Each structure stands twice: as C-alpha cells, then as structure tokens.
Image (cartoon, rainbow, N blue to C red; front, side, top):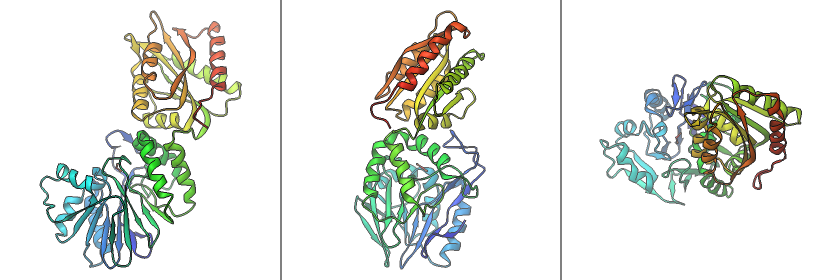
Length: 394
Ligand code: FEO
C-alpha cells in the first residue's frame, strides 16, 4: 500500500495475510503489516525494509513512491528479520545508498548478511545522532531492548513524526479494520512484555518531544489522541493492571478441573467480581491468555496433577508468564489430584520464581471431582482473591 502520511512522508509497507504464525508462534488471524516509510526531502531516506516474504511487493511500492528518484539513505531501526529481511535486496538495487543504523546494529549486521558488502556504506549513529535530509533533520534515540538491543527510534522534527520501531505496533494487517487496543496489547505483552523498564525509558525520552504522528513498524499510523496510546504503553510497561478483574486459567485432563474452574468463576461473579475471564489452557490461544493475565488485576490457576508434576498446558502457561516478566500480582491456586496431588507444588515452584508475586494461601485441593464439601474452600479462596490487593498495582 502507498499512502501519504505527510506531504513528504509516504507509507510504503505491506500486509501479510497469508502468514500462518508470526515469529513461528503467534496466531495472527487478521494477518500483520510490515511497515516501511519513504521520506522524500532534498535527500531521500527509506525507513526500514520489510520481511523478505513480501520483498517483491515492497520493492514495487518503493519504486512507485520514488517516482524516478533514488534513495540516499536506508535507516535501519531494527534488525529483526520482519523488518530487515529485504535489506540485502535493496542494498543491491541501489548501490549508492548508505545505511544508517545504531552502532550496535552495525556490529550485528554481518551476522545476518554475511554475503552482503556493507563496507563504506554504513553509518553508525549514537544517542542524539542526527541526519540532515536538507529540509528536515532526523534525530536518533537509542531504544535498546524495545525489542532487541540494537533498536533505535527516529524523530523527524519538521513534521513532528516519531518513527517508533516495534513500539505502538499491533498484530493485524492494515486491510483489516479493527479497534487498535486488543491486538496492540496482545502484540505488546507477548513481544515486549519482558522489557517494561526499557519501554519506560523510551517513554521518558518521547515525553520530551513534540509528537504529532507515530509511525510504528506494525499496524496503523497513529495521528490522533496520542495520549491514549502513550498512556496504555505506560500502564503495560509498568506492569500495572489495566482492568479490575480475575482471570481463571485452568488445565484440565478429563473435565473435572474445568468444572471446578467454572464453579469458582460463578462464585466470584456471585460475590460481585467486576470481570471474570475463564480460559481453558488446552484450547486457548496462549498469547491471548498471557495478555489476559497482564491486563487483569487478579489471577487464579487451576490444574490437574500429571506425572508427579502439573498438567503440561499449565506448565507451559506459567513458563510463558515467567518469560514475559509477569509481576506485581497475587495468585490463587487450585490443584486437582486423585492419589498424590502434585499440581499445586509444581505450580508453586514456578510461581515462587516470579518477581513481586505472592500466592494467596491456602491453596485449594480437589480430590478427583468437586464435591459439595469443597465449596466452602472455594468460597474462602474467592473471598481472599477479591480482598487481595497487590501493593504495587492499581
Ligand atoms: Fe517487528 Fe521486533 O520486530
């Protein structure tokens, strides 16, 4: 797609609607976009390339938008292959073009492009570095770990545009019209969730700039109400819950633990819980449940015992939360076991390694099937969950 962002900044990115899994792990039912921009000033700069899956379409967009001009610079803000996958091709096509990237990216480039000759064509920049395009100057700010160490963002002080790399991106192709927040959160938590502190550092830098437009590397260009998006990024990157509510995530082999989880949700609702989300970890999109866990203020995990451990879908879920830096919460536990319940111990062992997360005691143990005698323990856990506050949240 080719579309003007401002008079001299043109969107030249591409949609990918036939990818099965983004990063070979994330479901993207509505596809994803790889964004790239062209700045047509006295000098011409390309802002990032696209995944090689869509290189041909992108090169056509570039050619059309150039309208006979030649690019002087390729600004590489992020080396992950969904953005850097077409660098070698475009370098070959425009042998006069120089690459501008962070010093860290310059060091990493040979790892990705060992057959491409970059000598004499690469300009490394540092924090505060600038590049004049004639009518405007690009200002570079390093954004390490948002989401790789070599990432930088770029501010065009003339049009007041922040090129924000992965920041403020979302899943979903641009051809698919949908509300920003859902797929932006699922993208942020799963891609950048672990890197809250670096995102906070970037937000502090952004706060010093007069920004009118945000141009991310995925999803729509943001032009209005930027405080809304920046506010959500502040919430997500500081690990504050976005909503008051309880996630009940369960891993059930034969349906008995599922029954307990749904009963527990019913109890929570009856006690006035604002929002209760129940997820079957065997059948849910893992990235969505991780998103739920970060979004909501409280969580209860319920799982069957399995091979003296915990049923693998729950192990997988808790491992994902550990990877993404889940923190500043309290968690309730329900375990199920028929002869030597082990799920609670196994879940506790993982949760104990989370930072600033504590377990709401006591956990509830169900023996095989929920019985009327179990209800009082579930009621008590529900009371504790609803009464619990996490010192550092909300
Ligand atoms: Fe969209 Fe970290 O790459």
